[in-house]
Image (cartoon, rainbow, N blue to C red; front, side, top):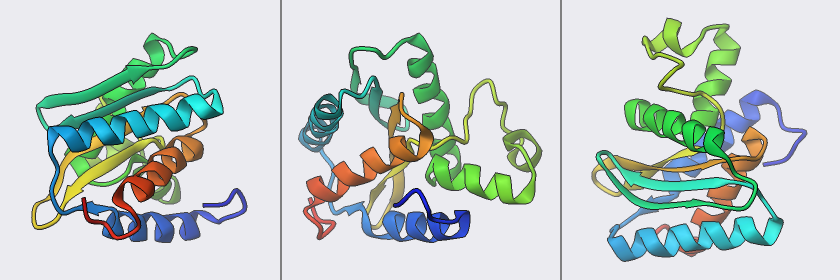
Length: 163
């Protein structure tokens, strides 16, 4: 993802990411590996983020780095809710809403109090099942939140989408 991409190009890139960044299996150890890799990458950048990896009803990993505050935890919660409800990345949702001129509430009936369409929420996709959870980062500009998640997913999955 580059800063000069159009919204349509970003949507195409996100669709490709969601198609390829798929786990063949996902365990508690996988969640720990992914979470610590996200934490390490964020620390290396000095990024003041909150990080969350959750299944639908079960948190698996959560970290708040220096500079992250309570508002980041709430953004994580709202982004996670959007991913779990719609099964797609929050950046894609936000770009589609921008294009249509609609809000989450107008298009999907989702309250902005409990949902957010800002980048940083990405579906945890398991081959054969689809979206089983969410990987969420909050604290950077939305495209950077999304890019951090994707960069680490690509590294953890080893480029072959099999872990």
